[in-house]
Length: 89
Ligand SMILES: [Zn+2]
Image 1: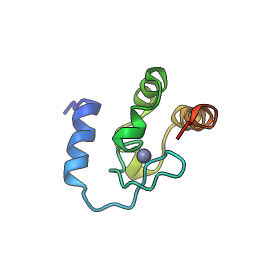
Image 2 (image 1 turned 120 degrees about the vertical axis):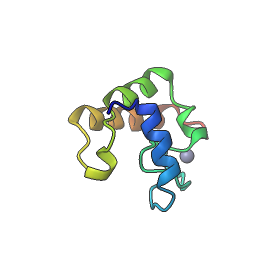
Image 3 (image 1 turned 30 degrees about the vertical axis):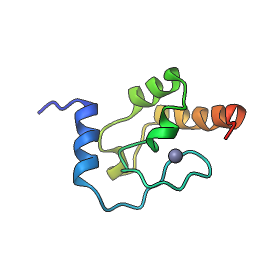
């Protein structure tokens, strides 16, 4: 069965409503489904090119198996660097 990443993340967000996972934005403690990088507000603060990179390297299920690819981890670091340089609250 081929499910698009978008559909996967949406269905996971609906199905999995008990989680202890927070937005990856530094200092944000908003709960978000594990299949998502962060809360909507912060996700859309990221530049499109970074969002595209996260999306491209994200593998459905990695949040369950805890084995994100090296590429995803590299992008996650890049995002944290970007936030450090650009965060204005
Ligand atoms: Zn957030």
